[in-house]
Amino acid sequence: MIMKHQLLLATALICLAASPTLAQNDNTLPRRHLGIGIHSSIFQTSDLDLTNIPPNRLIVQYDFMPTVRAELQVGGYNKETKESGNNLVPTDDALVASLGGFYLIPYEQAKFSVGARYRMGNMNNEEISYETSTDPYVYNNKQTISSVSGVIGGEYFFSKWFSVGAEFSLIYDKNKCTTENYSSSYTIPETTTTSTLTETSLLFRFYLN
Image 1 (cartoon, rainbow, N blue to C red):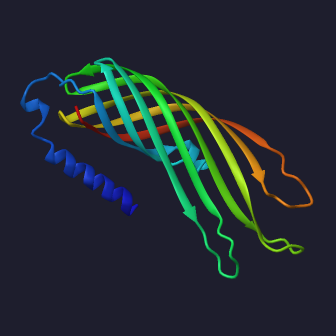
Image 2 (cartoon, rainbow, N blue to C red; image 1 turned 60 degrees about the vertical axis):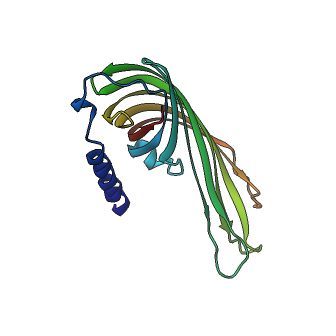
Image 3 (spheres, one colour; image 1 turned 60 degrees about the horizontal axis):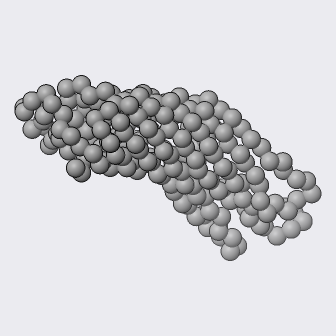
């Protein structure tokens, strides 16, 4: 909660600082091509069962023309856990990337967008097993995800260099899970899960040229 409040406060300060806005000039959006930003998920149904997908991602985008945009998003994390009494160090890590294409509709100081994304990623979740007949060992739950989403959204330009936006996505997700290095009297079969998810997001963009 503290991090969310800090993020909202930082956003408000940026917006106030940027408010010698376009409205003081004219109603024409300046041409900007290259932008970088931050994608921050507010709520996603994937929070219920896909908690290892990084919710915050880096955005790199390029507007080829006023109505066409290509976009790359990348996010990830890495975590190590050390336990006393053994030298095992299980890790959790994830890396996801998505490619998107959008049709843009400029309107005064805003741009509305309609498009699609393809997302792919790998996640590894290592755990320590304590079986009575063996020494502790690490096994890895490995997940490979792929998803396709339809996206609608918009952004408002507080200055010619900065905008704040929001998006709503409907996502079809496929998650393939395998367990590696698992020494047990039984085997764990590979599982494939498909889900239909919704996601709402905040986006903060800075335009470079």
